Length: 240
Image: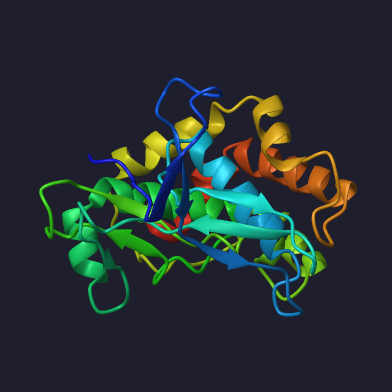
């Protein structure tokens, strides 16, 4: 597997030599800026937390940071560079090709999405697809998950507290069980404090208050435990 690199727009003057001995420079890295909206009232929180959760279980997702703005807190999703590794967006037209090229990553993403309630993965993956010598797969948008799984935060939490939801994944069925089981085991092995730290950020994020953040952590632990995630994966993905 290769690793993700991000798009550098401009490399400017060096930082004062009195301040650094590493040759560091100021520069601009490109990002896609996202914010909450009536249609996605928890966009910033969900993007940020989903990326943190992905990192915990070894899922490659575009890095991102919280950024302040006069109109409120926003999320800057760093743009993945295609300079060294040309990548294709995975959509309905090349989904089966993607699953053939990257069966491990397809299974891992599908299991992760079921855990966080994300049914919007197709169109939100970049993959090498034989375009380069490096194998690279990255999730680029996790906004339709967690508290944005449905039209409101309340409806989203109701979905997450249902052990049978989501009841579909756009990657379809037939994934190798061994690949699914690997990610299930990683999620089941997460300690409570890791999930709490990823989900509870210590302050309100947009409209997402601390009690809601704490409930996200609790429901993810509930979905992790008692064989619930395993059962959901078997039901929805029908691995072989």
